[in-house]
Every structure is written in C-alpha cells, then in structure tokens.
Image (cartoon, rainbow, N blue to C red; front, top):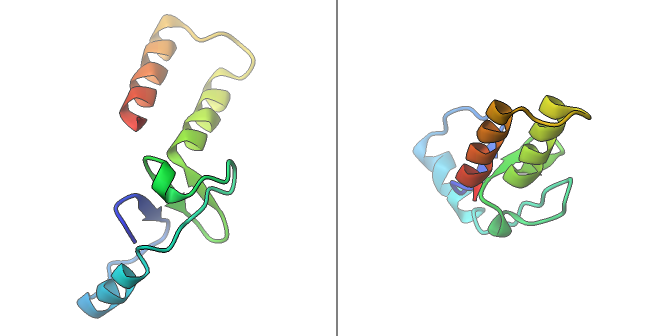
Length: 87
C-alpha cells in the first residue's frame, strides 16, 4: 500500500509481504462515497469492503460536529485547520 492509503486493522508485515504489497501499490483504490481514486486525494482509508478519502472524511466530521447548527468561532477555526491540513 502506498503512503496515501491507510488500511484499517492492518498488522505489521514482514519483508516478503511488504515486497508483494509494493507490487500492488499501483492498484487504484476508490472512495466508496465520492468515487475518486487514491491518486486524486490526499489520503484514503481502506476498510473491509469500503473506502473513504480524506475529503469525504472531513465532510462527515463537519456533519457530525455541526449537525444543523452554525459553527462557533472555535469550531470553525478547528475545521479550517483540518481542511488546510488535508489539502
């Protein structure tokens, strides 16, 4: 896996397994939410049968934090900092 793809529940691999996985590095991983490949996003989290990119994760976090209300200045500053870090 490339540095752009994080696999959930991954255990530490030995050199042989890592070499075999490096060959699969060129394989595209698509976000299950927006459909973009790992080559077009900052990071991708790969789970069992589902993947999510950093941008969709940020949208989900905003939705969970804010719900239907407007952000306070502190929350907005935090969200802005996270968005800037993802880009």
